Image (cartoon, rainbow, N blue to C red; front, side):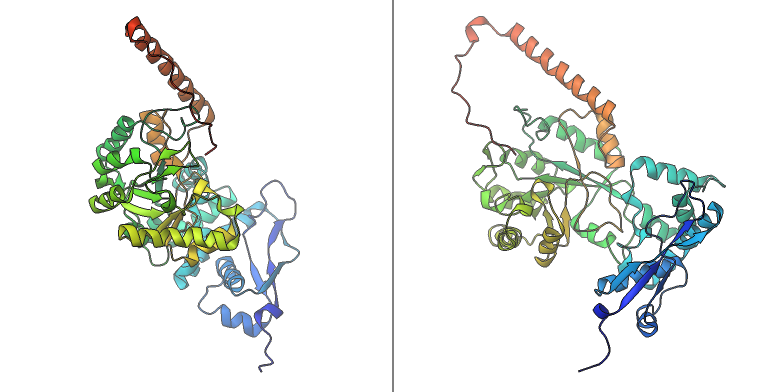
Length: 433
């Protein structure tokens, strides 16, 4: 038995900084200026990493992956904001060297998190980088250091991203409480034509794998991924018409050919339709077996739902899914770990935003397309990966409501009195999606 203590028995201290006089420009929380601890262990795990804050951050990540005990210590003091900005530039610059030394760290290094900020913040950051002397914020200072050190290819990989569109139904029935989930197929057709007209590049899972993670290549410009959840019967024909866009259809395999208990017992497509879609070029992904709310079930049930959905697709559709969509978009650390253990390369949430090479492949963001989206708001989602600002969204909802009322009035004015139909049976009790 070796007398050498394990990493779990050693303590490593993470050193940070703050301004002597805090004027609101304090250091970013992720800035690690130095790591101290057992010298031999530090030398072993810092092998190949650069000096500077980027190397310290990478070393802290390596130690964390190995289960080492780390703790923050009292911050060191800096006299001026200018000194802190210089340190942030050094952090950005040395982060590029840390990434080159260990590409597997990209998803955890700050330099891999370009798309963790909002579209507005990214636009301000690009403006600061484009105008000399505008890197006055700590964020801009960090990215100016990274930009100065990165090659053109590396910068494209870090900052070129893609949006993921999310659909559910394509019937256009607009039943009560389904307005957010049911996009008329005619509007879906127009939106797919927009992708072609403006030369957006629909991604395949193979292309996504080539761009995401260590050793990736920059994603094509204007890239987008089209995804559809729940595999309702009404999406089959629209997806068949637009198989050229390589849509990803996520299937709750236990409900195939049956009814969706999570959405008003709507009809789910059968294995015959799904197999035909796969043959036409639509990519099938897993969506659990019963559309279970994974965070609320036991470990055994969660594993059965996640792994079993992929097994069903292999057995019944002859495809091996590489992607999973969390039902209701809900997940935690356990669900992510279960998806990873089941062998999926990608997993999708319902959190809005864009994704890039440094995004967590098992927590990819998506933006929902709504029935009331205009061409302009759909374009906004393509470019930003986000929902429109609240005032714009309220206007879209108001406009859609007025259009529906006018449409009903016109239909009523043209319908002959003798055509009035007797009232039908009461609908079944509603269920929450």
